Length: 194
Length: 139
Image 1 (cartoon, each protein chain N blue to C red):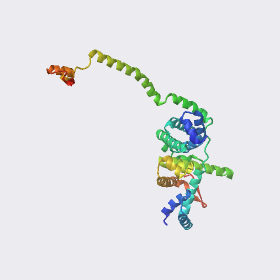
Image 2 (image 1 turned 45 degrees about the horizontal axis):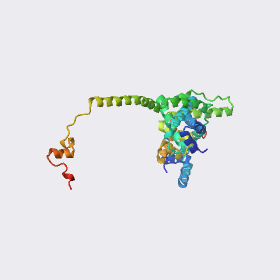
Image 3 (image 1 turned 120 degrees about the horizontal axis):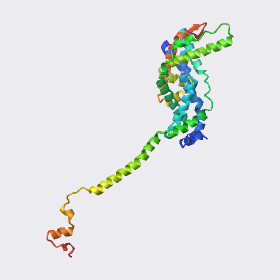
Image 4 (image 1 turned 90 degrees about the vertical axis):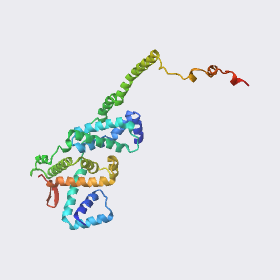
């Protein structure tokens, strides 16, 4: 069955059709929630809530946009509400990252590389979490989720020009936040602990 | 080209949104500006890290956990509240109608002074005016 037929059947209350839509989109919705919360349990709960919201909003969905775009919009708004309510937008400080230990010299090169990459990832994600909400969202959609400009304009209901400028500002701000961790080392730019 | 404009081009280049001319301009600048070259490297590192993100799996039995929640929520849909109030509104409205009807019957309709022309028929009026009430039909 095609997606539009699945949506139509779901609108009529067919649970099996809705189950197929959940199966198709659960990972995407979960990943989006995880990108913004960095917590598996929270992301899972939020993904479930997004589908509950979508299920009850389906009778009002008129199939004028793609189901995925509509669902993503619900997910973004729901996660944003959650972050606002729990005040998690500004919860992290980049100072927290300094707790991680520097890779030990006796570790194998491979392990060391893995640890460095893991550490870099941690720093970057913490830096994203201290950015303004709209910048977090656009970075998540474009650079983590890999959505196209066109998809982002539809989900956030903003013009391509706004996507461009907001994304530019967000990346610039992120680099500025990471400035203390970015240093030159033998021609390679690595993120190092402050 | 100034370095501020280059930063914009570097970022747009990551999305493949540069025209051929802009691309060449950027490459030429990067070759002779170590500062912008370093900037590009930094952005590359950040974006590569973000794009390589491995996500954990959602918890198992996603649908099986979701399904009972949908049924539970169904029981408390907002329209159910309206339906409940609507059901209560029916007997209340019926009682109100009965009460109003009884009031109208026992207290009677409001008395209105009738016009003379409304109180008598056409023939009655002619008689009152001392005229022949059959004159209209006279051929």
